[in-house]
Amino acid sequence: MPAPILTKHARDRLKQRWITEDTIESVLRSPDRTEPGSTPGSVKFIRTINSRQIHVVGKYLDDQDRWLVVSVWVRGEEDSVPFMWQLITLPFKLLWKLILLLSPKKTAPHSGK
Image (tube, rainbow, N blue to C red):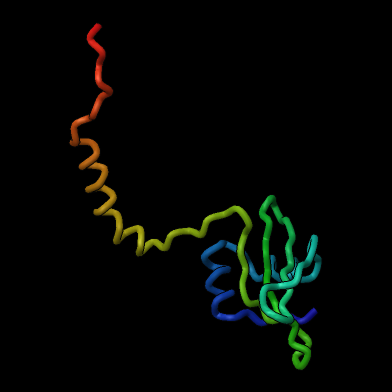
């Protein structure tokens, strides 16, 4: 099987989701199951590898005799947050925690019987 073509979106998702191109080829070559994709002519390949359910959406290019991979994700895993975004939001998170720490705690009313 010739190596698949990856869209920019698919390449970005590979990096973001810690998936290798070899894994993508393995899913395409030997999926546990396939389903029709959400766009006409596309196919969703699903395979569990090392307890991660990998989903690959692709469209077969007859003229090139290979798959065009459109997107990739892992079922049940959140995408990692980019480091730059973590850095930008850190001061706000720290400030919020400080506000919560310093704000007076509200207690339930005490019945004085």
